[in-house]
Length: 123
Image 1 (cartoon, rainbow, N blue to C red):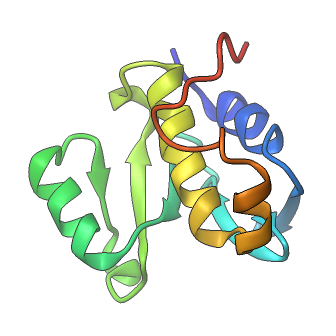
Image 2 (image 1 turned 135 degrees about the vertical axis):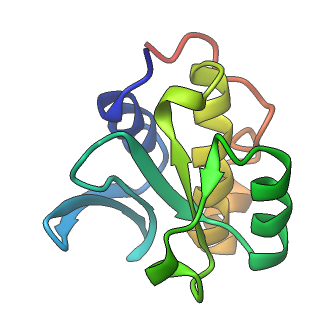
């Protein structure tokens, strides 16, 4: 089963990612911009997601994606770890969020980092 350690391992494999505790939980940042948080119950994680796309994700897969009421005005979505199909899906979600936070120069330097690009076996 996919867990918070998998989130941490994959997130930290992306260029210039650092882990920093905030709000008593681990957060992952690139160039100072947060792109992943892992709430303390560690059953889900939150990633950047434009609001329009977020609504579509939640409508298509409500068992996987949701937004707590206190985060409704943000451009983030939560993802239930137990609902993920595999590590490749986890990687795709994390890399999409990383690309939204990373500076253009970093995205340009790492064109292989994109959803669906695969990573071999990330374990």
